[in-house]
Amino acid sequence: MIGYGDGRAAAIERDTGDDFAAIRERFYVQDGVYYMDGNSLGLLSRDAEAAVHKTLHDWKTLGIDGWLNADPPWFYLGEELGNRMANMVGAASDEVIVTGGTTVNLHALVATFYEPMGTRRKIIVNELDFPSDIYALEAQIAANGGEPERDLVKVRSVGGRTINEDDVVAAMTEDVALVLLPSVLYRSGQLLDIERLTREAHARGILIGWDCAHSAGSIPHAFDAWDVDFAFWCNYKYLNAGPGSVGALYVNRKHFNRQPALPGWWGYDKARQFDMSHEWQGAATAGAWQISTLSILSAAPLIGSLRIFDEVGIDRVRERSLELTDYLIRLVEERGLDQEPYGYSIGTPREHTRRGGHVAIEHPHGAQINAALKERGVIPDFRPPNVVRLAPIPLYTSFCDVWDTVAILRDVVDSGDYVRQSDQRGVVA
Ligand SMILES: *Cc1c(COP(=O)(O)O)cnc(C)c1O
Image (tube, rainbow, N blue to C red; front, side, top):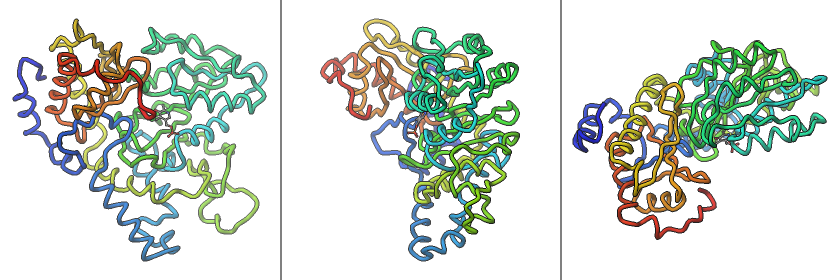
């Protein structure tokens, strides 16, 4: 593994011999920009762009007939894309469906799988959760006649950064009906032990679902082997399907007999959907959890984007991601950025088994550091109170990008640039 002592030349050399150089060429990486925010919004690939153009052309020329005659046919596109994504998450092809939005899918799944009974009414989450999940779960508890303050159990963190799996297990008491956790924490980038927590929940008769917004397209999953009950994720982060693109969900086939709590005609058995019967007959797959007509234009980029993942394979994506984040962490430390006067610290676990795809760089003036980095062409994002997130994306970030980013991290302090920035974060941070 190369480090600071090997110089920038070693980073260039590492990039030159790399198969990923050709993959990077397929993305619109802007000159002079170090794009480190692909965990929030992945970049556009030429493949995704071509897929959107193709879909527009199909609409132009086929009109309504695109539902069956476009390639792939729009009517089955959610199933088709789910099928193509299944391998990446360790699922059978009919257990994954591309549909809805992340929070909408959370609602649809939790409404189905949260069945409070007698004294078993609690949902376990954690205090570092993404806010949308909390809003949705509080509403789900209230809709079931419960009290969010009593029934939503937030596992406490270790120092506001990470969650200790032992604390989650300790919270799995007899009054818990459901556990809903992120695979990777959005701020610190900690990867939870999905397999262990799933096993521990099941041993206590508790169902468990996973919000994989920050792991899908970054980390291999084995949902079937781990026996996860359900999961959902967005496709606009590591999967590069564009701003607000359609989300995806997984339902373990052992639950296919369940009645989706928020049914809609798009989840109907496809062969008979156009019978227009008032009697709901759900698909015998995860497709039953679809609600509305798939947004074809916003699913289209995924047709192209998944082609790249098919070619590279999620294992190689993960391997390279760890190399890049290792390099980033190593450079921060070897350049002394975790010491005075720099004042940065790494908030992400060092162990590979506990690290997602981004690195949380903490700084007491994180909002100002973030603004100063942007002025210099580094695109990070800021999450209050003090985290600058940097995500070197295996498909399009080079080792040299990482080297330069760390040099700029140092320079915005050396030059005093960051002090001149406003300490107010932007409306979209
Ligand atoms: C990004 C993200 C979401 C996004 O929710 P949307 O409904 O797609 O806006 C949800 N959960 C987590 C953990 C996220 O990181």
